[in-house]
Amino acid sequence: MAEGTIKRLTDKGFGFIDTGTNQDMFFHSSNVVGTSYEQLREGQRVSYTEGRGPKGPRAENVQPI
Image 1 (tube, rainbow, N blue to C red):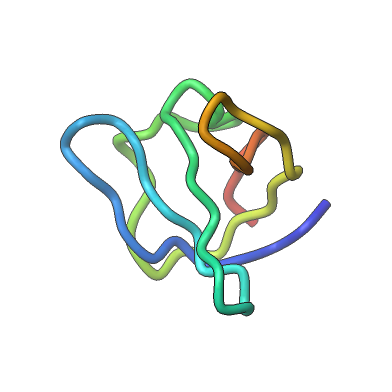
Image 2 (cartoon, rainbow, N blue to C red; image 1 turned 135 degrees about the horizontal axis):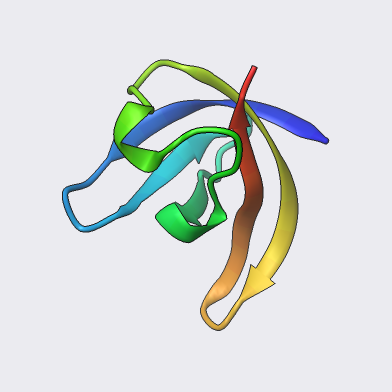
């Protein structure tokens, strides 16, 4: 599993993970496991698997480390 830091969370139920590269990884609240989307915080470390969504790459199985 890859690791990153939550860069941004929105009120609409999605966010972005700083992957350490020049491209952030999108994730949706339905892809959060082990906790709820509401408990995530910007700056928090998470692990995830890379998947594909209808608009390109997205993080799946997002969980706090």
